[in-house]
Length: 522
View 1 (cartoon, rainbow, N blue to C red):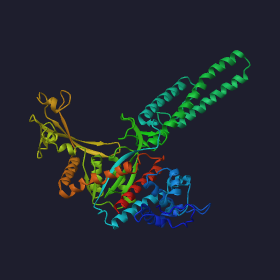
View 2: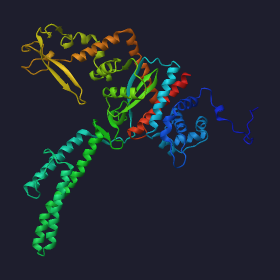
View 3: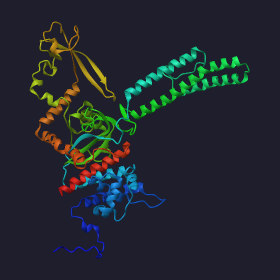
View 4: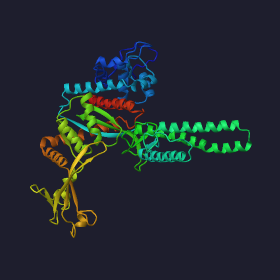
């Protein structure tokens, strides 16, 4: 005996909501998007043309598709025809893949996504799923939608640009020596600007026109041949100058795209070439990508940001600024790994933001090892006389204070050092093990007092029971989010190009991870 199965019997359509399970992820997507304030939807209003699909509906179907690891516009369109939860969220509408793709890359959608994170965090607080005591910050690199070998390197462009400057200056001097053009007024003696190169082209054009007029006016064959021969050099010069202008314009555009970066991709200029862990070449090749920074608590992403520079150290301060401006007030503890430990970052968190920085530094783990502590040639282990401000080396020589030095890094941050020097290293039996200074020079020691105080602060905080337990929580809080994103959601590569579009895409993906986890915990 079989259950009744009749394809010819008429069945009235029921409300699709009945078909969904009680804790279906579609309900959580629906409630989250509905909690977005109406003011955030005002930029989508239009007074002319055909009425647009409601942005809440569009955001719901895209978010729901992302939770199912569907990122293609065509596949999202297909889901609208055969997925019950997608049909319910769309309420019978079936926007095309073009409409879906156009919607999710709009700049206005970024505010909707930000509101999703704000409202989601509010919901977590209401249900006591996070305690707002600390945020855990980390970053990962995700491959951009850029061709593999379309890199442009700053050093190469600088080299070619310098060669162009030398060639253009040499050509200008030749023209002056040959008295082809008069001397022009220059803004900079080191290089010719685009306007000055254009002036040279204009003057050479005038000389070529004079030769053309003389050739047309002359009836003597020998004279015409001689004039054409003389005209040959100015025409070659004109061609060279035009080539220099085109190349100089290209190099200037390259430098504008670079900004503070050292590389970019031709197919996605906002992407930077970075060393990825999942390298398809298996030989350390660089791939175009973006540095994604997230702040989490309870394994939920509460804020995110996208950066084009590969190092995490320089992303912390702008990321914290963005969190304060766009998401929420910073909690008491800010937790991150050693990749964020720097004097500038500690100074910003402790002095400017008045928060506690539970962030290790590069040498933190090494300093805990017995080998480091027992190394007698390490200046950190030397005896220090605070009264006389001197150190004593293993050969019982005094290391005395000499002068102060201030160093400024690439981004303009200044660090102050105290320079100490040994009184006499000549004849020292430990010289080869103690210093690499040339013979006749004494060992020098650089001490950054502010940095040492910050390191002592970190060591003290991580030795306390409460703060050390918060720091240990970092690995099980922020790291799994990237695992969920890449392994469970299978989001390992962007499908859009340009930083603004990529920001929308990663925001949707991270919120999809949040919704999946929130639904699973229910």
